[in-house]
Image (tube, rainbow, N blue to C red; front, side, top):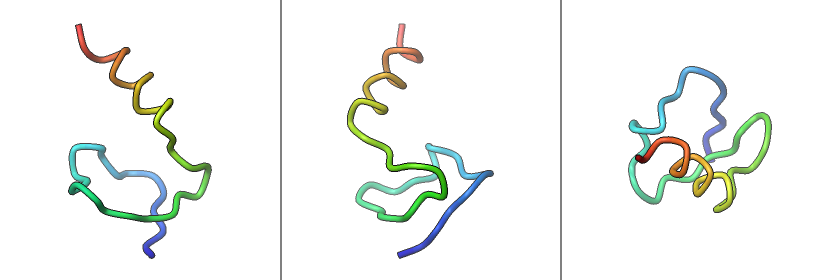
Length: 40
Protein backbone atom coordinates (compact mmCIF):
# COMPACT_ATOMS: atom_id res chain seq x y z
CA UNK A 1 0.00 0.00 0.00
CA UNK A 2 1.27 3.43 -0.98
CA UNK A 3 1.93 6.16 1.61
CA UNK A 4 1.03 9.71 0.62
CA UNK A 5 1.60 13.05 2.26
CA UNK A 6 1.04 16.58 1.01
CA UNK A 7 0.50 17.72 -2.57
CA UNK A 8 -2.13 15.14 -3.47
CA UNK A 9 -5.47 16.42 -4.81
CA UNK A 10 -8.79 14.70 -4.04
CA UNK A 11 -9.78 14.87 -7.72
CA UNK A 12 -6.72 12.81 -8.67
CA UNK A 13 -7.89 9.76 -6.69
CA UNK A 14 -9.39 6.96 -8.76
CA UNK A 15 -12.36 5.12 -7.26
CA UNK A 16 -11.28 2.28 -4.98
CA UNK A 17 -7.66 3.35 -4.55
CA UNK A 18 -6.21 2.46 -1.15
CA UNK A 19 -3.30 4.14 0.59
CA UNK A 20 -1.99 5.04 4.02
CA UNK A 21 -1.96 8.64 5.16
CA UNK A 22 0.70 10.13 7.38
CA UNK A 23 -1.74 11.98 9.65
CA UNK A 24 -4.98 10.06 10.02
CA UNK A 25 -7.56 7.82 8.40
CA UNK A 26 -10.22 9.56 6.32
CA UNK A 27 -13.67 8.44 7.45
CA UNK A 28 -17.16 8.73 6.02
CA UNK A 29 -17.80 11.64 8.40
CA UNK A 30 -14.81 13.49 6.90
CA UNK A 31 -16.20 13.02 3.39
CA UNK A 32 -19.69 14.17 4.43
CA UNK A 33 -18.24 17.27 6.09
CA UNK A 34 -16.17 18.03 2.97
CA UNK A 35 -19.21 17.71 0.73
CA UNK A 36 -21.32 19.87 3.02
CA UNK A 37 -18.67 22.60 2.91
CA UNK A 38 -18.22 22.57 -0.86
CA UNK A 39 -21.68 21.91 -2.34
CA UNK A 40 -24.21 24.73 -2.47
